[in-house]
Length: 432
Image (cartoon, rainbow, N blue to C red):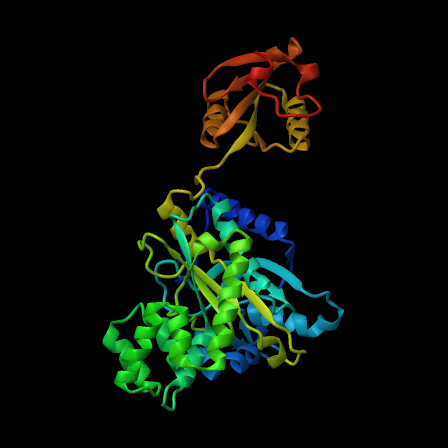
């Protein structure tokens, strides 16, 4: 007996059906917004992640040397891959470029609730537009994806901030600050005790008094106070951009889900502008459900032309926690439109009816094992068949089949010559 690897999961049909329903709903929203699907490889060169995030990232990767002597890694995220793709064909692609993809990723990290070593997410990105409306559309897509699953504003909220606000505030202080380390501390601020947070800010270059002042201005979320406190053009411009993005999100119908949260930082270093995270409004799920933001420098850092970009990546595992908490996770049970039951030597006619129903687009099963009438009825019940079509020798002698509605148990006869019809979804009610 082989054990499943830690951090990897099996999805049996019931759960996979629910997951597929959620993925289809999110992808349907992406297509309505004009995003085009792309396919990407499972392996990339390890150097691509090292150049973006530093040598320490290798400890979090499934990285190895392949038979050709190349250092490769199983993709831990999609953004570097799509950035590489844009660089390769950037001049030939119409701007803005709007792509999406749903696929698995791999990270060798600590397994915890909603976080696994193999995980699935839908990445949605806009390349080639620095206009705040691009950020607003990403926020609107994310909101529409969640509401399409049955979630409401009582279930989730987007906490929106701007990386240049944080960086500009730190610059305005009379200290030699490691901005990257300080922003990473901000990203952890809601997860650790206050004094520990202040300690991280002190390690980044602030003194304790400055750390408290920095925390106080972030906690206030008053943009006018913030501009006055910093007194720099960088913060002024960032605040104006943030306001424009929120205005665009409002115009696209996502304003009700957005709130300013200056302590929202996003830990990844490549973010450059507006960033946001989605949280459970009730607080029952303490971690962020997903996040996104603007990363205007990444394409250029990969050797391409300067290309602004913004994106979001809803992950299926944390999203499932939110949907389950809100009671909107799809029912995990198989559904079947028809089961074609065979009694006696009726295989040829049963196969013909099965094929015809499938050609109409229905989910249809039939006997594959020569089972008894009772066993077939038990199986039909087990797969939640809505209608059973009984093809028996006596019925065929009378040129009819029996149509049985499983929920009520009622059944009737239908002329063999008229079943199934050339269109529609015939049920008991059509022949009763």
